[in-house]
Amino acid sequence: MQRYILDDTTNNFYKTDIHHIKKVMRMQTGDKVIVCLHEKCSLVKLNIDENITFDVIENYDENKTLDITLVQGLLKGTKIETTIKYSTIFGAKKIVLVPFERSIAKNKNTDNKTDRYFLIAKEAAELAHREKIPTIEFQDSLKTINWKEYDYVILADEEEKKTLLKDLELKNIFDKKIAIIIGPEGGISDNERKYCKNNKFFSISLGKYIFPAEIAAISILNNFNSWFFWQLNNYNI
Amino acid sequence: MQRYILDDTTNNFYKTDIHHIKKVMRMQTGDKVIVCLHEKCSLVKLNIDENITFDVIENYDENKTLDITLVQGLLKGTKIETTIKYSTIFGAKKIVLVPFERSIAKNKNTDNKTDRYFLIAKEAAELAHREKIPTIEFQDSLKTINWKEYDYVILADEEEKKTLLKDLELKNIFDKKIAIIIGPEGGISDNERKYCKNNKFFSISLGKYIFPAEIAAISILNNFNSWFFWQLNNYNI
Image (cartoon, rainbow over all chains, first blue to last red; front, side):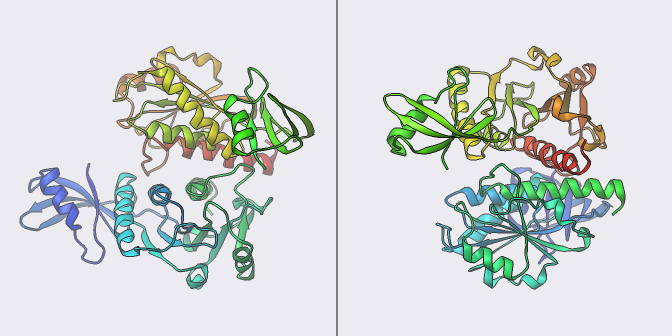
C-alpha cells in the first residue's frame, strides 16, 4: 500500500505527492492509500479532482516513538546525505547540521540544501514507514543550539573508553527529549569536548570498533530503538 | 596509528599495503604500525627493505567476537557495495552473495566482483579497527549453501510479525556459528520462505519499520554486537 506523509502546515498532501498520485501512480477516486499526519497514520480513500481530498477508513494505533534529535557535524561531499537517509530510517525525529571545528564542509547554500535534504528525508521516512519526516535545520555552532529543550544530551566521544549507552541508565525515555551529538570525520576538538563537559552532557563510547562519522548515529539510534524497545516489552519500564 | 590486516595465506602484508607503507605513507625502518592476523592484533616495528618484515612490540588482548555470516540477496547497482562496506564495519565475518528469485542482479563476472568487493571489505575492516576482513563468496542459490556449518540460521522475514531477535533466546552465542539471511529489494519468495521453514531456520521481524535491503543486515549485526555484548558484561552469560 502506498504511503504518504502529509505536510503538517497545510494538513494535506505535498505538491510532489499530488503529482505522484495523479501522474506516476495514476490513481483514481476510490483508491486507498495510507497517510500520516502528526505521527498518526490512517487508511484513507482518495477523492481525486483538481486537488486531492480523502475520507478516513481506519485510524491506526498510535505508536510510542522516541524523540531523538541527531546533532551531526558537517561531513564532506555526499556523506551527509547518507547520514540523513539512514538516520531517518533508523528513527531520528530531527537532524541538526553543524559545522564543527574540524568539519571541512561549511554552511553554504543552506536554503538549497535544506530543500534537497528534506526530499531525501521524506523519501526515506516513507520508505521506512516512519510516521514523521525529520525536521532538518542548520546551526552555526554547538553554542547556537538551545540545549534547554533536551532532557538528555549524549556525545559520542572517541576519547571515552568505558561508558556505553546502557551505562547511562536513562529512565522513562519515552517521555524525554534526547539529543545525540556526532562529530565530523576528524572527530571533535578539545574545545568542543570541553563545551560538552561544561554543559554536563553525557559522553559515551560506541565500543572498541570505529564507526565512520556518516553512520555512527545509526548505531546509537538502533540501540535506542531495539534495546529500549525490548526493555519496554519485557520489563514494562 | 596505521593498521593493516595481513594476508592470512602468506602471514604477511598484502602487496597493496606494501605499496601503501613505502610509497604513500613513506614509512621507514623503525616506524610502528598495528598488524592483525587471524583476528589477533599486535603493535609492531617495521623493517623496510625490498620486502617488509616486522618485530612484535606488544600483542593486544584477544577479543571475543561473534561469528556471524551474512547471506545477502543480490541487490541492484552499487547497493551491494554499501552492504559489504557497512556490514563489515558492523562485524560480519563472512558475506555470502546469492541471487534470490526476486533479485534483478545476477551472478556475473564474479571473479572481478570478488576482487573489488574484497578491497571494499578490507578498507572498511581497517577503518573500523576490525581484526578480520570478511570472506566474500558467491553462491548460486540458498540451496547450494552448506547450512550444516551453522548452529543458528536466522531469516529476516517481512511476513514474520511477532518474533524479534531477542525472543529467540539464543544461548552461548560466542561459541556458535550464526548465519543471517537478508533477501533482495523485492523480498523473499514463497518458495524461499518454504525452504527456510523446511530447514527449521528461525524467522524474525525487524520491527514495525521497514529497512531497505542494503542496510537491513546492519540492524541485526548491531543488535548482536551491542545487546549481547551488554548482556555479556552485565550478566556473564
